[in-house]
Image (cartoon, rainbow, N blue to C red; front, side, top):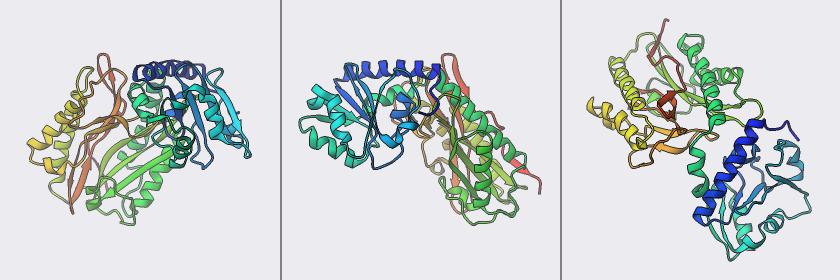
Length: 382
C-alpha cells in the first residue's frame, strides 16, 4: 500500500460514511456503487485511475463498505484502517460478480452509481441486476460533499495560499509577459504552481488582448505586447500530508504597461466593485442566487450586464467545479462549510476581457476569503 491516511482524515471519512448512510436511509437508497469521480476519494482517500478495469466501492445502507480494485492497483490504495475492506481482483476474475456478491439482498434494490462511472460499467451492472432501480450517486452525496469539514477547509485554505503566491509573482512582474506567447506564460504559471506545492495543474488560462474576451480561452501563439490586458485564471490540486488533494482556482488581471484601450480601467473598477458586492453578500442563511444577484447588479447598473456571460461562481473541493453553483435560480441556502468561487467578468468581444476571482468559505459569522492576493489590476512597468 501507499502511505496511509492521517488519523484526522480517517476520522473525517468515518463521519462522512455515517452521514452518507443516513441520507441513503432517508432517500430509500439501498446501496451505492462509487467508481470514477470525486465521491470515491472523498469517502476512501483513494482516487481511481480512469481505466477500463473496474474500481468500485460498494457501500450498503446496512454497513458493508468494500473497495473492489484491480489487483495491480491495490498497492496505490492508502491504508485507511478499518474504514473499508479492500478486495483486489485478478485478471481472471469478474469484478461485477464480486460486487454483486457484496450487494447480496440489495441486488433488487434502489442503487446509486457514480455520475462519472463508465457507461460500460453501468450496463454490466444492469445486466446482472435487472430488477434494481437506478439513480445518480450525486443525489445522495452532492449536498453532503458541498459542506466542507475542517480538514477539507484546511486543505482548500492551503491550496489557495499556494495559488496566491503565484498570483503575487505575476502581479510583481516576476512572470515575464512582454514578447512571450500566451502558451509560454501558461507554462510558466503551471511550473510555478507545482513549485509552490501543487500536485498537478488543472488549467492555466492566459488570455491576452482580445483573447481575454473568451472566458475559457486556450492559451495559444499570440505574442503579448505593450498595452495588452492579460486575464490569468489558474488552479490545480494541492494536498496536505495524509489526505487527498483539493483544488485551487484564482483569476487576476495584469496589464503590460498602461492599457491601450481607454475603457479598461473604468470597466475594471466596475468589476472590482461587483466582485466585492458578491463577497459581501455571502452569509450563512443567504441563498446561492442572492450572491449572483448582488455581483450582477453592479455590472447591470453600469450598463455592462450583457457582457457578464456566465454564473458568478461554482463550488470547489476535490473537484474544481461542484455544488453549490452561484447562479440565478439556485435557492440553496448557504451554510457554514460551503466553499465556492466569486468571479464576475466583463467581456468586450474583439477588445478585451476582465475577470476577478476568489475562493470563499461560508462561516458561522460571515465569510472567509481564502484568496488574499491584491484585487487591483496590476499595471507592469515596461
